[in-house]
Length: 184
Image (cartoon, rainbow, N blue to C red; front, side, top):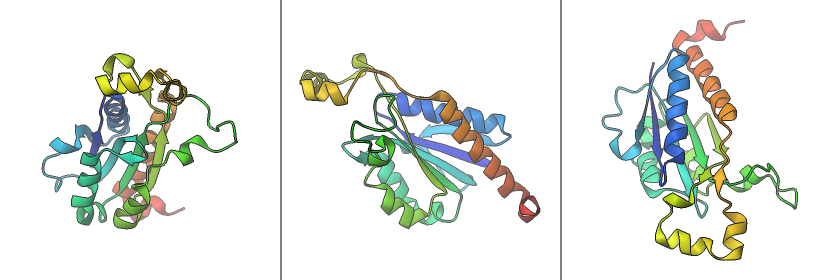
């Protein structure tokens, strides 16, 4: 099965996650390639999709949202998984006991669920390398409140990312095998 792992990344962390997902899917026997959504090309040859975006201020990057919405007819007829990156840190809950990942789900996701019916959406912790920030982002990080919610470091859990990708590979293997694979 040919799988596109499409992504929208601002500073490269989401791209690296997409590349790892494509590697794991390839090892699982799928033909997967990671490409930026702006350079996805003709989608007709893909039998499944994993689409991810960095999330900023509660939203996917505009190019990723445009990709999903402009291709929603095709995506709604194929197996699709979505992922978002963005929360920084290592705690699954905040000081008030709120699930950090659930709170970080981008506002775009409910509309995607309705439009394309993805099999899953997963939020991964991201990474912040101050050397890759724009001047405006560096200026913002000088504010004490911004530093508290934007700690620098790489918070991606590669084992979690690989496990999620393997689960997609297993589901795709079942799709490849057809109804016989689902039989007990």
